[in-house]
Length: 114
Image (cartoon, rainbow, N blue to C red):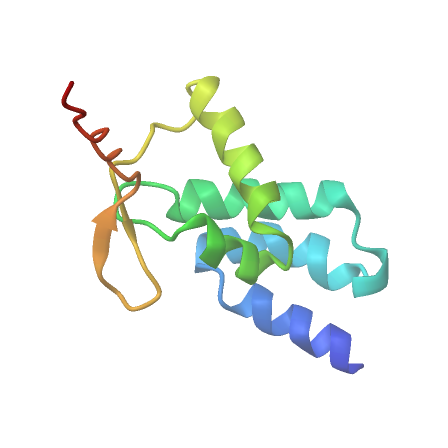
């Protein structure tokens, strides 16, 4: 087993048991050099359904798990939210284990006096 295949196997091994069975066939059977964007999208969809709920993993964590960019995960996440296949989350768990708001509240504009 090459170094790239070991890294892919570790990524797949961190997926929950029910998701692992579906993802392992795709990612382990295919050498890492031949993983297509469709395979990555399928892995992202599985990860978002498993961890995308309230207090779940952030898009950055899912991107690191799958091996793609955070922007790609964010785009797919937004597609699922707008198509009502995944509810918008209010909180997310960071890498340090703390739960934080999923979106930041905008700062009030400065008050100007005449």
